[in-house]
Image 1: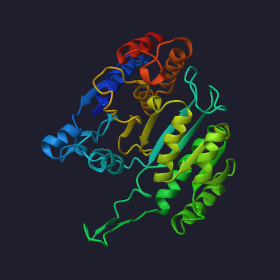
Image 2: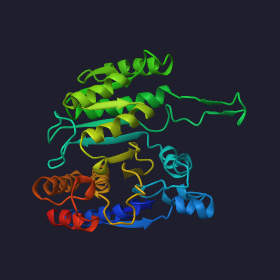
Image 3: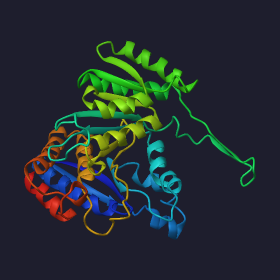
Image 4: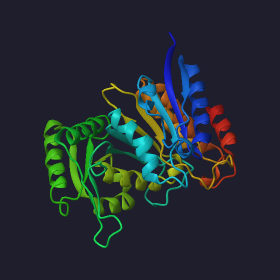
Length: 351
């Protein structure tokens, strides 16, 4: 019996509009093999809309996508619109109002994509679990005496017991399905309140999950170890800021941020989850037809997993590995000459 999913598409800015069509083409092809159909609703929420209408999305935007099965996002950001405007006008409201408290970023060294790190061989993989709705990226704070000599800015970090506990439990439960190792990113030697609190809750999570080994690393030492010996890691869990930094660093270790995916997950499934490549809108290559679609395609594979179709998701990832490992077809960011369309066609032929 066929399964239908209703997907909200938000292409966004720049190459976001160029990488979502390849992702939906892949979804449609693999879906046909597995009895899955997709119904797409497009939403033109982007920086161009902000420049014309003063808002990234309409006031009732969240209500328009609240009942979709998932959200597939291209990219957000464009010159002329400050990043905090584009992010806080679209991405962050979706993440927070839909309680997408897990930001999941798998890292994998693909064949044919050499890592700048000598020890990172093809097949190396781990995952970064980032707390996605509180922590250092809170809205608490403000500016005082703007423009005066004594001007000041205050930004408060918010760490709650429920918020930290649930992201830690997610990381430990994920590790139990993998290699049973959790690494916690901390900085409790320098940040006197929030990080010792985080560490205490990590120790409590360890007691709840006795079969999972865990340890903690100060963030400055941890980023060095991710570069020097990435194979030692399985699941890395961090606060909003630390997880953000670690996941982009790890994608670079894997050879290209252009192929890196991300899932913003609402594990309770009360609200839709959102999937997005992490490469950004890339204004310098937008409109040239050379964008790498793999980040969006891999994000679509993560969406398939989340929607209950792991075999279909695995087929997409296998096709990616096949193209990168067994063909010379590459987009420019990977040292090749293929257009977005040519790369996508090659991958579709492998599914």
